[in-house]
Image: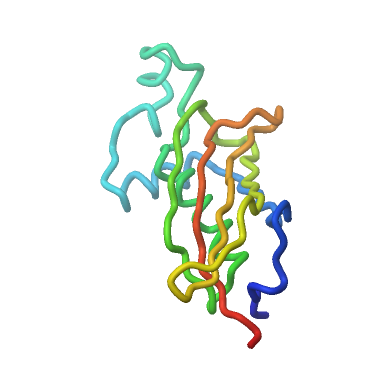
Length: 141
């Protein structure tokens, strides 16, 4: 189903995306991204560095937020910009909920654009990874 510019209003929430990260996924992501920092897959190493256990890669949470946005805009939409900051740690075995909200709807240089706030929340509802995205959508006309 195509999401059209006319179907979106400022303040609209994006459908949430709940991820269930596992230590297996972290090991796979380490291999795919070549990010082998041990805090992402070695519990003893993570604990020796003051952590309770392994933590998710920040770039993996960035990818989760990219999926949130691209799933929402569909194949006809275009992700123009994606930016996140890492403010908290997320751990495997605990759901990471990706959320977003449209903050601005406008036309610029012939494109139908939306600015969105996006974020990852942990199971306690704390925002661990805030960010923003700009997308372009087709028009019905």
